[in-house]
Image (cartoon, rainbow, N blue to C red):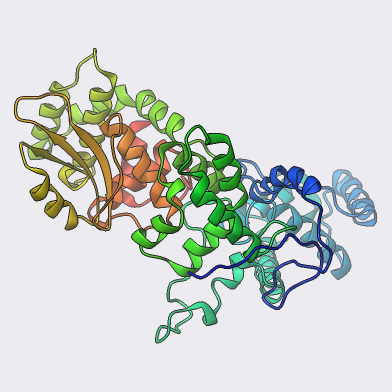
Length: 440
C-alpha cells in the first residue's frame, strides 16, 4: 500500500490513468472542490424498486409514438430496425449505470419488463414474457460497456482484470471484486481534480488532524474527500486490518463507520439497524416462541431475559435469538469474559478472527468494556451496548470489504437483507424462510 506526494491538478491524464495537468489550481478555488469532491461519491443511487425507462432520442421517440398508435389501433407489434434498437439500448444503458455497472439477471429482467410496460408495441412475438430477447440484449449491452470502461481505466472494472490478481492465482474467477452486498459505491474513481498522490497527501494530513481535539468537522471533510482512495485500497489491495488501521485510524470510530457505510450503500447504518430490530421485535418473539426442539428451549430462555425497562438488553436478546433461530451459536457473535484478568483476555482475543467481546467483573451486571475484534485486534472499544457493537461489526464488514464469518453467515445475511433491506431479492433458503415467516 504505497502512496506519495501531493499535487493539485486539473485536466489531462497521467501515465497511471489519473487525471492531471500542468495547470495548478488556486487553493481558494479548491476550497469549494473539497465539498464538490463528494459528488463523485454520491453520483450513484441504490437500485430502484421500479426502474424508470428514460426518454430516448427525438427520432427514436417519434418512431415509438407512431408504433404505439398502430398498436392501439389493431394490436400490431413493432419490430424495431437496428438503429432504433441501438438507440433504445443506449438509453437504457445510461439509466442503468446511474445505479451500477454489474447487474444481475433479475435486474436485467426488471429493466426489460419496464421497457415493455412503457412501450407495449415492443413486446416480442413468441416469447413467454414478451421481453426475453430484450433482457438478453440488455445484459450484452452492459457487458460490452464494461469492456469499454476497462479500456479507459474505470477502477470498478479494472480491479477484476487478471493483472490485478495475486501471483500464482491468475484464474479469471479468483477473487473477483464485484459489488456483492448491494454496495452502490463499491470502487469509485478519484474525483476529477484529484490524483492518487494528492489524495495520499490528504490522508497524511488526516493522520495528524485525527489526533487533535475538537476537530470533528475537518476530519469528516477529509474522510469524505479520500473515500475513493480508501475504497480502492480496500478492494484492490485487500490489506490486513492492522495495516489498514495504521493508514486510516480515523475510520475506526463509530461516527466514521456510520459515515463510511452510508458512502458505500447510501443507507444510514445505526439508525436503520436499530429501528428495524425494534420494528420486527414482536414478530421475532412470536417466531421464537413457535420454535420447537432444543433450539426452541434456548429461545424461550432468551425471551424470558427480555425486560421492558432496558431497550438495549431487549435488542441484545433478539440478536442472540436470531443467531439461534438461524441455527448458529450466539457465542460466535458475542463472547463474554467474566472475572478474567487482562492478560488472559488478550490471549483469548488474539485467537479471535471476528467477534464482539464483553468484559465483566464477578457479580456486576454492567460491563467494563464492549468492543469489536477483527483479526485478533481490538478495533473498537468502549461501545455503549452489544446491539451497537453488532451494528458496528456489520459496518466494518462493508468498510473493509470482509466476508461474513462462516459460522455466522446466515445471521449476517438476515441482518443485511431483511433488516437493512440491502440486496433483499436474492436470499438463501434459510433466510428466505425466515423472511416469509416474519412477514406472515
